Image (cartoon, rainbow, N blue to C red; front, side, top):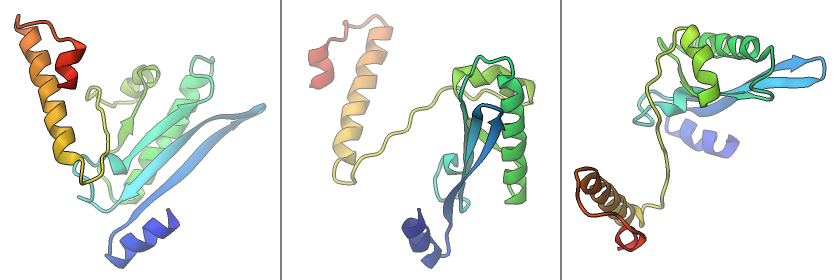
Length: 149
């Protein structure tokens, strides 16, 4: 990140990460990874989101750990001038986040590809979704040959 951060800084942009952790008597109970980038650097603003990692997601104190980490991440976001905070959450985190006032925006998927492959990858992905949509409307059954075509 240091080298990449320097390249962004040269262009008057920023891109960085920070981590906060909740320590328990037997070791870490969880941590939050907080992303920070210049506004508009990434269209979905996921690079200004935070992610939770809970060591024992079903432990008795897991929701208290989540709350401490979320509180820290939201305050960190506010210090950076962000009026909202977005969490990239696992299904296990959703009830605690919703109890803290977060809204479930649904599942997302992110992938990257080298710029020389983007057009082909986009065409393949479009073909897959077109076939799936046709199947959902009573079209022909999708099989592996169709997806690989």
